Image 1: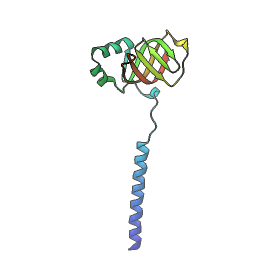
Image 2 (image 1 turned 60 degrees about the vertical axis):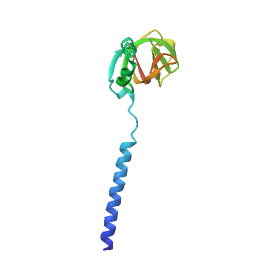
Image 3 (image 1 turned 120 degrees about the vertical axis):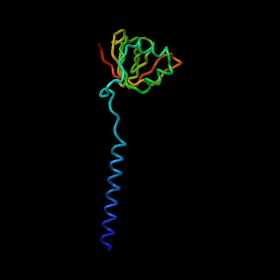
Image 4 (image 1 turned 45 degrees about the horizontal axis):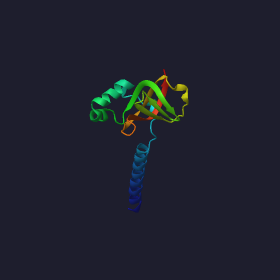
Length: 131
């Protein structure tokens, strides 16, 4: 009787440990790099901003925390922050110098919201492509 009880306890422990391992493995996964994520939307900066001006509530419902590709002209470069057409603020993980200023680029990043103070739309985790 003792042997069967020990076997049952051992089986229950193995099942519990396996369950905890599977939960841990699936819950603690590293984030997928933005380069590997397919864009949900592709727009020019002008289209994107005009859609925001029409209805910012509907715009935020549609685009908030989505991966978006935008094509526009670089107007400001400051370390790892790039501004497109004076309306889209892109935060990157790389640092840039003024050599990309006034060039047309494609940016892929996550839209995180509107900044009322500076009157621009913000994107995070941006990846830059020169056109």
